[in-house]
Image 1 (tube, helix red, strand yellow):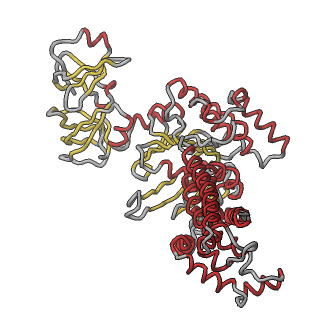
Image 2 (cartoon, helix red, strand yellow):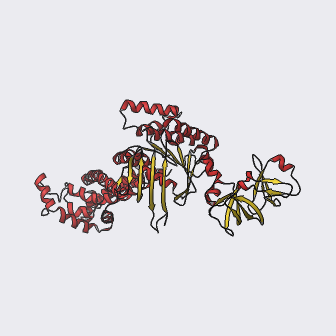
Image 3 (tube, chains in turn blue, yellow):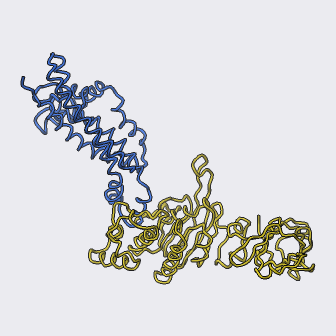
Length: 221
Length: 353
């Protein structure tokens, strides 16, 4: 039997893009939450963590409402790119990001807050701007836990199922990711395909979690 | 010159529940030591000058430029305050070499000037050979020098040091004092140093601000402070004071004298300002100002030694009730059987409780 590896490659691609985009958004949000006082901070904090707690189908429903072809975001996207956002690989990226960002924000915030504030104060007293303090001092000092969080976020993006299924669908060869493919294969009784896909995803995920733990541990050594 | 007049109150329930800082002072281009027990607001003052914490009241000026003014809601960002800060734990960036640490601070200078200035300071603080090392590869003294060099690279208008001698052993402390005294003469900027170490305080201070519980209770040169501690807490901090609980027997303002009852004896004392007959007050004296004698006389109290301790310069004899006397070693060896402690009137100083 010919094994179709497309879902795995798609998943890796989606997870890579989603993690990269989430890293920017997540680090920025984490910095904001760690360093700034602003009205509504508690709300932002809570909303950021919400995707971790909400059922994936509920999350997918919200995404469909916000990004669907009848929503203004969906229409604007369609006007610009010429194709709808839902039921494409881009939608899978957004679904994955929704799970990667909360993870990244939580760990990055903890990492940034664990940096001894005297280093940042020292930077400021030496005439450095906040931007420079962040890039040259806070971020390098938090790089290990940050890398650990990124690895974990990548693993999480790789395995998203519920929200992805609802907003990106299950179109073989176009939007069918690895996690969805496993479900599909089991449903249709293709146990061999399911088994191989499960093994591949498990191997990659174990590797990532292992890496993440190592990075996290080395920080204390 | 730094002019500080600030107040900050911490709400109850937070870490420093109910703590209140209220200080006012000027610091000239010399070494001003903020001295006092931990938790008295010394570092808080330093942080307010550097801009790390914002006071609620008052004003901070550096060479006539306003750094902070509560009234007009002005608070210059730390990076624009031109204050060099040496942190208690040095705060050298651990992921950069010594040279990079210094160069980080010099980025506002043109490239050529930056190199020249970095090299110059590395040289001056004997760090040239260590320039490529990371902070964790440096000894305590080297870290100390590197952090001072880094703070100076921006040519700050004031230098703030938070307990710089902490954790250093004696020779390194001496080196630190030499660096600081040298800086005082060459840099000609106000140097503010926080410490609760008496030795450090007296080794470098041109001027001492004695902190107690968020206030400055005494200010002056080290000698003035030693001669006339303002409060019992100050005297305890300076160490080596003998305290007497005394009752005022007579007051003679015309002759500037008094008589007080100390340890059951009538003793002549100095003029006691603001006291009346019958008042109970606290007096203190330094052990080296008290003497032993072999026979009774004016201002002498008969006592038996309770405990004798060898000290580098003399023998410290404890006569009980907190009465300690430093006696020269040979004199103690040839001491009479009957012992009297001589308390000269001029050795007694009045302190507030």
